Image 1 (cartoon, rainbow, N blue to C red):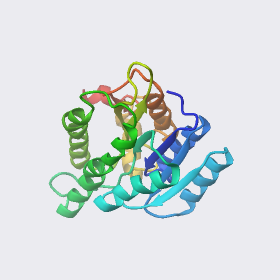
Image 2: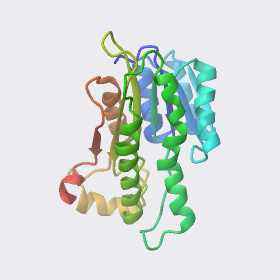
Image 3: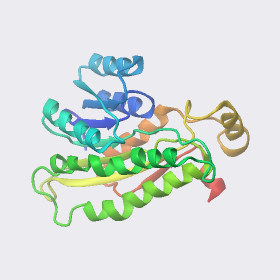
Image 4: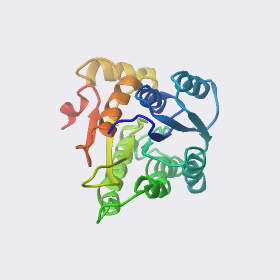
Length: 249
């Protein structure tokens, strides 16, 4: 799928992984709706860089961990751009502590942002399915596969005490055979620069990451672009972790 003139909604898109993804999409010709908790300097830089590329960029300030605000992201994007072709759920938050020391408030907050927000953003399946949805659409897949992956990764973050954002990607493809077909994939980026404490960074680089460096938001954005633009990829969960998966598998 080419991104020329496509409309992409990216939660957590004002900076970090989401911001790098938004800029990568804009370079490929997409228009953006980016979401964040506040319109800070990072949000302004991301918006300005996208507009400097000649692309439209709307900013929706909302906490997608709250149902009504997640749905507002979708509605404001539709009002501004008229449709949604790609959704990247990249919003995330810290969940410091392990499973035994984590507070109930932090536990529920992590699930609200990383898991429940996907359900509340799901109304965008209507514009994504605009046209002739394929019979037996992805709602069953969402319940079985995506929800399970998000729950599992949220649990892992609680056990390890890290705070990696795990983007979920949904995009609409078209064609004469399967117009309006919906694809879903996700990736597991860890660890990404700026997301961990100095001691965690030192431990990871020296002991846990075979490539001996932190990942950059741009490293993750490259993979998200591939998940969106490759029409033959769906249902995939891609690890971007410098080889850490090899050591725990």
